[in-house]
Structure formats: C-alpha cells, structure tokens
Image 1 (cartoon, rainbow, N blue to C red):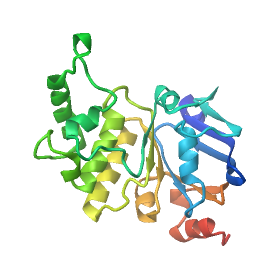
Image 2 (cartoon, one colour):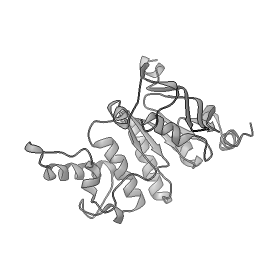
Image 3 (tube, rainbow, N blue to C red):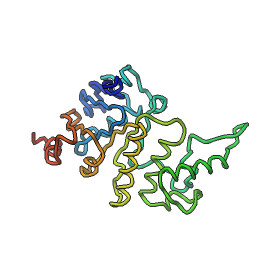
Length: 249
C-alpha cells in the first residue's frame, strides 16, 4: 500500500466549536483520504455545516487540530483554506443571478492583461472549455445565471471551484443535489465521481441516502455535535445509518 493511502489527505482531530453557551461541535474527528468521497451525515443541527465551515476557514475552533497530509496546519480564513487546496461549494452556491456565466465563473479570479485590464476574450474562451468539461450546454456564456436550471447552476459553481485558478485537492459540498430533479441530480453525482477520478477528494453533506450510497466510499455520522461513528458504504445499510443518525443504536 502506498504511503499516500496510509496518511489522510485531511484529518480533523478533537475539534470543538461553541457559539456562546451552545456546543456546536464536541471533539469531532474526521479523516479524508486521497481519491475518496466521504459523506458527512446527521440530522438538522448535528454540526455538519459547522464542521465544513471550520475546515473551510469561516469558523475557528476553540479546541482540536487539523492536519493536511500528516502536517499540522492552521486554517484561520477562507484564503488559508484555498491556499491549502480546499474549495467549498455551499448550498446557496454563492452565484450572482444577474451576472452572466462567464463573470460568475471568474468572479474573484479574473484573467487580466497588462495594467490590470480584464482579458474578456481569454476568459470567454476558457468559459467555453470549462462548460465542455462540465458537459453543460447554455444558450450563451453571456446568459444570466438566474435563467439557468438548478443543475446548470450547480455545475457552474463546481466548475468555478475546480477549473478556475489552481486545481484544488479537496472539495467540500453542502447539499449539492438539494432541490434538483432526478436527471440533474444524477449529473451532479456523475461530476463528483469524475472529480474523484481526477484525484480530487470530496466531503459531501447530503440528506439523500440514495445519493450518498451512489458515490461515497465511507460515511461519518454526527449527532448533537459529536462523532457517532463511521461506516464503509459496502459494509452498511440505509437502515443502519438512519439508526445512527436518530440515536437508535
């Protein structure tokens, strides 16, 4: 077995986060390996989104440690996370509905000519290439995002995280198929598997167990801000995971 398979790409140890008197995370542990999709599961209020925001640098924990490839690191801001190769696709996608496809893809990562002038021609060409990689068809790259389908918007958000700027090592996805129909959900799931094949690891938050079982290799269950346990997908069932989430076991 190769060393990279033994050492987690990302490891969270004993992370604790409080909001006033509320204990949102209590000594939570998580491991993510190279070329792996791990699902982070739990009922509402279990601490899933809080943990994602700690890893992405939005929140800082009061206790615990984070390691990247075995080395202890401090993620004090979203910029720190990006510099470590961690990108996040939130449930609200953080897209600008009145702006076009090209502008949304390159927001904050614009290509420029000399003297800081935007290189719209180059960004346009790159937008066409990215859409082809994502297998997304739009009427025009100048089409407003709000006029795209939910699945198209999800793909654009994922494309911005993966294909614009430096290629990430880790993608955090918060409910990427929420509100999508069957066909569009399947496209997003296929895209996740493609990311894995490209060597990008994924932490997936989802309430849809069918989607989780379709793409994830392991599941980690949180309940009441605590790590309840983890299971390999091949060694568990929907029923067992539901029982863990609800505190039946």
